Structure formats: structure tokens, C-alpha cells
Picture (cartoon, rainbow, N blue to C red):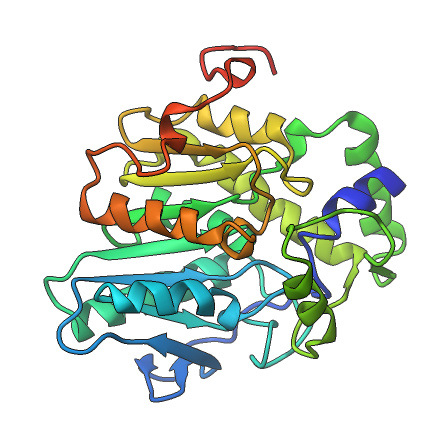
Amino acid sequence: MRILILSLLVLLAACVRQPPLPPLNEPAIEDKAFLTADGQRLPLHRWLPEGKPKAVIVALHGFNDYGRFIEPAARFFRRHGIAVYSYDQRGFGAAPRHGYWAGTSAYVDDLATFTRLLRKHHPHIPLYVLGESMGGAVAIVAASRGLVGDGLILAAPAVWARWTMPWYQRTALWLGDHLIPWVRLSGSGLGILASDNIEMLRALGRDPLVIKETRIDAIAGLVDLMDQAQAAAPRLQLPTLYLYGGNDQVVPKEPTLAFLRRVDARKVRLAWYDQAYHMLLRDLAARRYWRDILSWIQSPEQALPSGADRALPSSLALTDSKQ
């Protein structure tokens, strides 16, 4: 069980499964909040360029994080005429029911609703969903159902499904979820490095809005989401930029490759960065990755400036069918 806990805790945060309430009102984008159909006000963050934006990005954070995760990158995109929106997903940051896991359907429905509302605010402007880790898994599931915009940008998405785990990890998760689901686990001292930007990691550790512990039943809920994201690979039809780092100590390479082997290669562009970590959008070399994202949005058929889409290691060749 310790192996499973060590590997998953960096991805997951203190959440308890909590279904959305029945619809109460018309969803809306307010000044500082995204009002959902069931009456939840999710804190809203936005970085808007002067004048009409050339494109719009909706950024989804990972489990132990919240909407301001994208701020450094969003300032960069804003200078290039791209509007960036992000909201604290249910149970995270300053959103209602802090620490409660809302379930895959709630997160996917929120994303679908938010992108639909943004279409009305920015008609006829290309809209992209950028998802980091858990946010990437939500984006994949939503896109596979035809619910979101014109393209996906996936930064180390969480696709570590049950079937890609060894039997003893699956067994430990099942036992923990059924016998001691309320137990909270801390990720401190596990030795997993999520980024080489140490000062950024220290700031996250001091931030009260960043969740530091997780219940075992929350781990099971998050694996449910990853199951669905992995299964959605063959149905992913949106143009997609998939960013992954050779130093990722959070999302293993094996499930990542399992996902990539099952997508339509004509739709998905893989950018492989040998030195990048899991939180690559906030790594010390993050500007390199931001420039690649910007280039892909502006000229999706051209090679990325970094050359990362031409540097896939032979040991990770997608034609290798070995799991």
C-alpha cells in the first residue's frame, strides 16, 4: 500500500466524494466567480489582453492546487494577445466545500458549461483547454464527449488508470477504500520532486489554499477519473498538444505511453522534454514550454520552436506495443 500512496499523493489532495446538487439557476460568468447550475460559486481568475483576444485558454489545475497555478504562464500569453481564464474547481482553493471530492461528472460538466459560456463572451475566437495533471484528465474526458472547444493542451495529464497499475497497488487501493476510507495521508517526506523550481514548491507549501493531505477514498475517486481519461484515448478527436517531461516522478511513463499509443496520431502532437518535471509549466525552464504552446496555437502545423516534438527517445517509441 505504501507504494501506491507514495506515487499518488503528489497528484491527489484532501477530497471526499460529494455529488453536485440539482440545478437551481442559469449558470453564468460573474466578475469574480463562475456560477454553476447547482448554485456553486467557483472563484474565477482571468488575464485579459488589451483589445480583442486572438485566442482564449481555459486552464484547469491539478488536485492539490487551484486556479492561480497558471498565473506566470497566463501573463506571458496575455502579452501575446491570448486571454486566459481559470477557476478553482469544486473542493479546491477557495471553492465551496474545501477538501470534498465532487466526482468526475461534476468536474466534466463544470468544464463543459464554462467553455459554453465563454463561447458567448468571445464568439468566433479559437478556444483551447489547457489541463495540468488532474485538470488534463478532466479535459480529456470532456473532449472525448464533444463538450469543449477547438483544441487541448495537456501538461502531464493524469492517465494512470487501474489497469496500468500492478495488482498489488489495485488491491491496496480497494482495501483502503473499503476498510479505512476516512484515513488522511500526508505527502510530506516522500522524496518525490514535482519540479526543479524549488522556490515555487516552497511557496506552495506555505499557501493555505493548497491542500496538503488526502483521504484514501479520495484516491479511489481520482483513480476513477484517471480510468475514464485513459479509456477515452481512442475517442480523442480534438487537435491536441501533449507535453510530458522525462523527469516526471508523478505520472509514470508506462500509462502515459499506453494512452499515446491508442490516440489518433494525426490529432495528437507529443512534446517530449528530457529535463522537464511534472509541474513543467512552472519549472525553471517553463518559458521554453510556454513558447511551444504559443507556437502551436498560432501555427499548429509547424514544428515547435524547442524541437521537442522531434526528440522522442527511441526507448519510448509509440510503435512499441509492449505494456
